[in-house]
Image 1: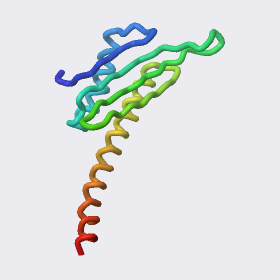
Image 2 (image 1 turned 60 degrees about the vertical axis):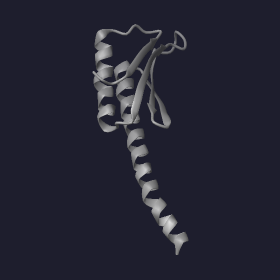
Image 3 (image 1 turned 90 degrees about the horizontal axis):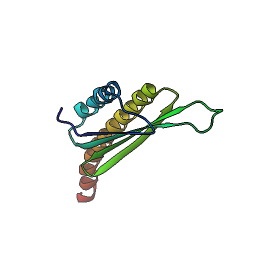
Image 4 (image 1 turned 180 degrees about the horizontal axis):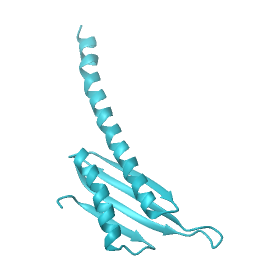
Length: 116
């Protein structure tokens, strides 16, 4: 695997099954975007009190050329949190790509208006 994925667990033991699940999911992000330098995924287990159920938080940091995308997701199931996180990161990458195309298209139009 060529991709640089840093995986850490906070109040949570990372099993091999969990690691392979995260690597499999984040591989999708690297296929969409070549500009990703590093992906940092933090998985956290937090129980606020005994009355509340355990909540799992997945935080993702994508370091790209020039910017960083940071997104988090939480739910009662760790695997659902990871799925939701990767979906949000994927949407963020698609939005970034779309916005770059729009800016590229708009720049020549603005220059042509002022040149005339």
